[in-house]
Image 1 (cartoon, helix red, strand yellow):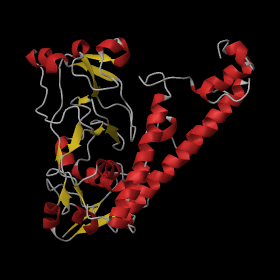
Image 2 (image 1 turned 180 degrees about the horizontal axis):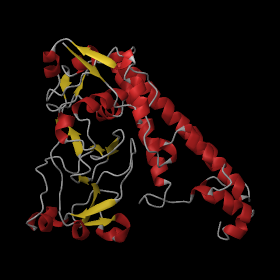
Image 3 (image 1 turned 90 degrees about the vertical axis):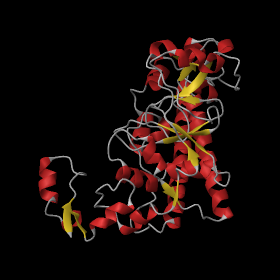
Length: 357
């Protein structure tokens, strides 16, 4: 029997000293063999028996394909930002293997569901030049260009998983995996990966900043759920993807960008009105996304009977986009320092700021 005191969640030395005497931070492990229930046998003393039993469920490794992705070791030559190459040479919207440049998942900032589609890679003639380069490695993946799930390998916060459409390759730091079990639904797997349950499992499997493909293989899932529950999960997950994609495409950095957001929400001749409409629209979308994530967490927590250990409220980490921000960030919409509102005050007329509108 051993007693552990967990102080990792407290930052300052003062907090750690205070919490040292808190009995709630003490964990007693009666059987050292319990650690062997977890792949790799990490000393996850804080994991409850219920959490440990999750690793006895159906393994990802047997139902997905995930291998190390492309590692060019000469990114300045083989990779480009998508807007650095003409559309006629790129396969951005429809998979065309006759092109030279193809989208590649390369990690990026914290973002769930969809996005971080910034880079393209030279894969002309099935990557002939890249494969010829002596220092490169391209991975032995049989499902390149298939729809899959991608994530950022290196992060100091929580992990975020995104839908990867047909037509993408992936980089070593933006790993992707493909569901090969025909009885598994990719939307169910994506929502499960973005749930608080998987976040807890990954903290146990790998408490570092570099998530390995072996950690993904070691994940387990209870896929014995009703058809009605699967349909509900699929509906909520698809809505999350759609909202996240719409938000991603609203920025000029997306290759599917079409119209400035202020023009999309124009109802009068005043920029300030359009800006307020824009804030309201995306605030409502954020609430919807938040509600969906909470409901998805609730579903998985119920399936695994973890209501006494986890709450359904979603995690957020280092928000960079409206959709990933907590409510306190959304209140910045009304800040007089916001660039759109500053512009609106300087020019109250649409025709002054946008003569072509």
